[in-house]
Image 1: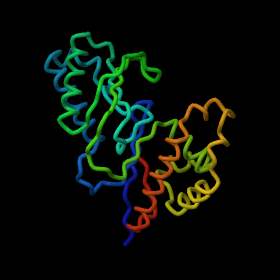
Image 2: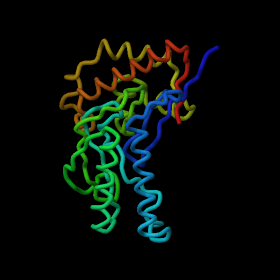
Image 3: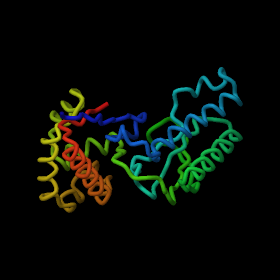
Length: 231
């Protein structure tokens, strides 16, 4: 019997999506921890501000991966969006985030605060200096990175990629064939200084993500999974 494991693409507002096939994996990872810390922050703010006071912030994500960070990475950047919270609350929430992450084996240091290019909010960058949580099959990609990797690197046409999104899955056999071709023909120099959109990507990171996708395909083959579902 062929098992189908869902591949979740969770659009985190405009910056990132998570791809995962580990529904049966009970290990805690960075994605789980960020979910819990978001919940904890909102509970604290509701207690301090009341439901009515917090209502204008409800629905806004407070902390998430930077577009270049992935759940298995041991270094990288997290984003804390302040959404015009009062300064005292920003300091309080920042302390909660740092303490909660440290308690869960994710070490972070405050880097800087700047205007977000993706959201109407300031953002505090938190550098991940260590992550001792278990690795799994999760792949976290920004929407732009996902489209770039699948259409420019793995060579789905824009129509093919959009069809996969609309039908809700990638065919593993088709994906494997395209990845194998990409792996043998891809040269980072092909993308140098040819297109402003492409040159904004770190090619070393792209190759790393391609390897992650290969690992995911191997997992599918081992477990007789023919479709990677998209949500």
